[in-house]
Image (cartoon, rainbow, N blue to C red; front, side, top):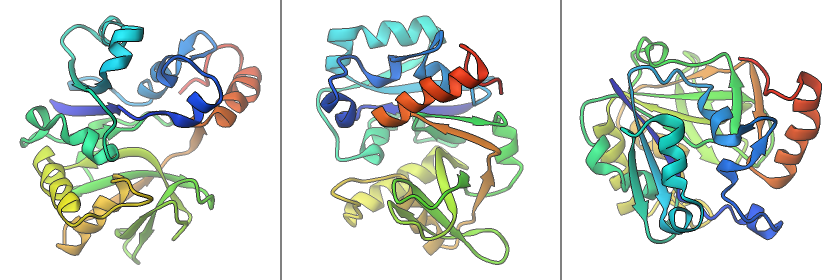
Amino acid sequence: KYNLLVPMAGLGSRFVNEGFKIPKQILNAGDKHLIDISLECVDLTECNLIFVVRDDHIFNFRIDEILKEKFNSDINIVVTDGLTDGSVCSCLLAEEFIDNDLPLVIHTLDVQFSPRINLKQLQDTGDDGHILTFKSNSKNYSYAALDENNKVIKTAEKKAISSNACVGIYYFKTGKIFCKYAKKMIALDIRTKGEFYISPLYNLLVSEKLQVGITQVEKMHIFGTPREYDFYRKNVLKKFGNKPLAL
């Protein structure tokens, strides 16, 4: 077993500002919701699924019932009654489920990638932390810089310190490791643009000689903004048919 944590407590302000009324995770793309497309990229066998959701999304859109219908009733749902100071804080709300010796994978959604990833691939690296990456130079993403052994020496949010952009899949050998360094990050007030992002957290692991590696994905589609979502629907789905690109 491992824990797969999906934080969904953000405001999604760019979608709200464009007039979208429903949470972006349940927007349609072809015959699926965006959350289906993102989670299909990970092998969910033997995983404990944990979602962090906003109470207004439960009240207005029954997001808790939708998630249970999609992923079975035995998932864990953590509810927050307001915005947090970033994805690290959102993930820590699930501390009771993840602060243990089980491996932890954090999936921040809004992406489709291939090939499909499974936990054994990440565990077999022997790394204390591991990041899925793709090639980019856009300042919209987070990045990982490597040493001569292809191990991470530095990560940065919204700054292209290398060509290795983060997909949004973050692995920790144990949930305890994540919780320890997440709390340390908050105590040290390590923010980017006022928020606690996950990728800079790996700098704390590296500073204490823990090993962090990367795996490059082969194909990558992003729909985290209204513009990206529109492009995905009009170009990716149009090119490959109504169903999302087969993985």
